[in-house]
Every structure is written in structure tokens, then in C-alpha cells.
Length: 553
Image 1: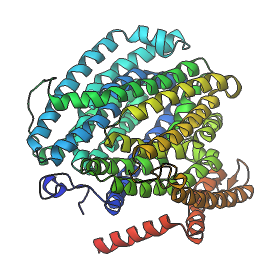
Image 2 (image 1 turned 180 degrees about the horizontal axis):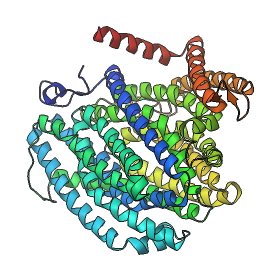
Image 3 (image 1 turned 45 degrees about the horizontal axis):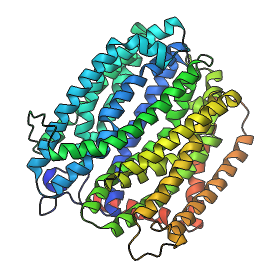
Image 4 (image 1 turned 45 degrees about the vertical axis):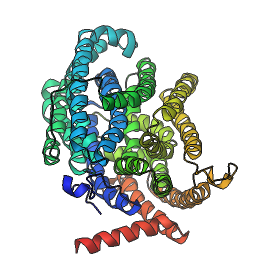
């Protein structure tokens, strides 16, 4: 079993190919990555706590969040998820075939083309920043807010090309089963923004945050370079667009770019709609979104990051049966972790927000606004987590079109629901629309994947397997987690009735006690209930913990 931070020689098998991890290997590697994701999300949470104390849910923070839209759009379309989903399978295929020189040549050509495109696009966006803000991003902002948003956006665009190169390096390292330093990079990024909020914001105001963003992008890149050098990278100054592997990356990127364009369009529509609501609406949505992403990132993204190269290696080896066995085990694990997390976010919404954010300019009204959006976002947590895993299988199968088509339909539905619900639920309608659309996307992707990976000898009407997926096992596992989570939520709600509403107990705000004690006891109750219900996942996690303890001893 390879360690996730192993050097190149340890990440290969005897013929020079990438070694595919089995379910235990993925779980073991994901444990370390999950710990780093916890650190990353923890520093991200600290970042938002400090930003909240400095700016609350005020108009200048709305401008800062709106300024991210164009830089995020360019990064995602050119260098983010689209490139990673196309580059990793192609790079891993070349590496698995034993042609490391060809793999690094592909890396060099993609890096050169990527940097060139981003520099050109970011330069144009800087030039037209003010009309983009006024006419596209935030037409509902005041004139002063529009000018501030354009100024902040220019700063953020300067870091986008750096992030593009860093993202490609991350993809190459993950493809060769190195996960440690790529997982450390977001921690340093968050720390830079924390420094900007803590040290520079009192002097520079909201501009202190974008200085932190620019510095964090540089750190995000530099921390990964030692690992890249240890892989014996061979950089070439080559821009050959006609290379077959570069064309394959471009071919795989095409549908994914279209899908991400619609996703970013959805975010843009939410920004436009929120810009016409009272000040602080966009900020409240953002805080709630980040809180929902906290468990999703720790669980689903950590597992997906480790599993994606293994999915790609299993597909390259033609082992569809092992691919589905790996996916089945990971989906059950994701359900086991994400269902109780959604319950905790829903029943402990205000106590958690009060504990984490309510200080400085972030007051009780801000807490209530964020909690209102968080309850709607929590409904979609499980779907977001499952989609994170399932789309990786499609990408490993060199099928970027299917999840894109499903994603485009999801975004269209999301936008329609947002327009329908915002009048009744204000910014809460935007959160609810996201949860409903993502749940439908999850169901569609599971059905399509089941059909795609069906074994040739399977009966076409085998309903219990959804033509490829072990539905009965997934439903049984999910039902156990759902029941254990309901027991946990019921116990927490009973406990909350005993605490004074908004008061102080033993000199400590009751909300803080509810969040810490309620959350801790809730997790304990869930673990015990899952064990009594015969959950296989709790036993697997316990066995993994024992193995790691024995290894370290």
C-alpha cells in the first residue's frame, strides 16, 4: 500500500505505471487527506470568522464576493475543474503505459497554453472591469458599490493565472498518487487571506482581503513545487496544440467547460438577483454556503480526490467490476458521513453560527439571516456529496459529456426555481432552489452511471442493481444512517429545550453551549445508534482506525 505522500518511486508499480489503490488503500489515503481537508476547512472557517468580525454582512463584503465572479469564471472554465477532469485521466494513461517522458511533455504543453490563455483573458477582463460589473455582475448595486467591485476584481484577476498553473501541478501530483502538498496548498491560501483580514483590513479596508488573495495564490503554487521536483518533472517550452494528447485533453475539456459555464452562470444569476435584495443578502448566502461546504469538503472532496486517480487506473486496466465495487463502498461511506452532518447543520443552525461568527460587526441579525439560508442549503448536502463522487467515475471513463448534460439541465432548473422562489422566500429561495436541483442531478447521474457500467451478462431489468449499481445495499445503508440521524436530531432538540433561549449559562452564551455540547453528544449518539442498527460503515471505520494505530505503534 502506498502512502499518499510517497515519492515517485513509491507511487508506481513494477512497470512504471500508477498503482490503483483498493478500497482499503483509498480509505487509508483519504484519512490523511481528510485530516488535511479538515485543516483546510478549519482555516477557511477561521478566515470567515475574522472576515465576519471585520465586515459582518455589510455592503462592502457584498462587493468583495461579487468581485470573485469573473475571476472564478475564468479559472473554472480554463484551469479549474474542467482542466483537472480532462488532464488527470490523460496524464495517468500516459504514465500508466510507462511513458513518463511523454506524460511530462503533455504537462509542459498544457501548462504553457494554459498560462498564455489566462494572461490574455485576465488582461481583457481587467480592461473592461467596470462595464462588466455595471452591466452583468451586479446591476442592482449602488454606483459606489459598482466602482468598489470593479477595483477589487482587478486585484483578483492578477492571481488567476498563478492559480491556473498551481491547479495543473495539483492535478499532475494527484495523478501519480501524491496528495500531501496539494492538500496543504489551500491551507496556506486561507492563512494568507486571514493575514489580510487581520493585519491589513484595519488599514486598507476590504482591499486588505484581496491583497491576501493575491499572496495566497503565490503560496498555493510555491508549496507544491518541491513535490513536483521530486517526481523528476521534465519541463519543455513547447506550445504544440496539434499534439494528440493535448487534443485529447481539449476534447475531454469541451463538454466540461460547457457544464461549468452553466454552473458559473447559475452563480452569476444568484449574484444578480441578490444584488437587488437588501444589503447583506449576498453575504448571508455566502456564509451559509460555506458552512454547508464544510462537511462536504471534509468528507466528499477528500474521498473524491484520492479516489479519482484510482478510478482512472481501474478504467485504464479495463477492470469495470472493481471500479463499481470501489464506487459502491465509497458511496455507502459518503452516505454514512453526510446524512448526520446535514441533520446537525439543520438543528444546530443558529447555535453554530453564533459560536463561529457572532462577534464584531456580525450581530444577531446576521446570525438569523445566515441560519435562514443554511436550513435550505442543508437539505442538499447529501446530494452535493454524492455528486462529488459520481462525476469522478464519469471523468475516469473519459465521459465528460454525460455529467455536463445533466449539469446543464440542473443549472437551468436551478435558475428557474430561483426566479420562482425568490419572491416568496427572498434569498432563502436561492438556497432551496440549489438543493432541489442538486438532488435531481444526483438521481439522474446515478441512473445514467448504472446503465453505463452494466456488465454484459447482467439482465437488463435487474431492478435491485439499477443495471449496474447495488441499489439495495445503498438504500439499506442510507436508511440506517437516516434512522440513526433522526435519533440524534431528536435527542439534540430535547436538549435545546432545556437551555435558556438566547441567555447565558455559567457565564457562557447558551448558543455556544448548544453548539459544542449538542454537537459532541449528537455525534456520540449517532455512532452508538449506527452500531446498534448494524451499520457496516461504523465497523469499517473502527477497523481502519485500529490498523492505523497498530501501524504507528
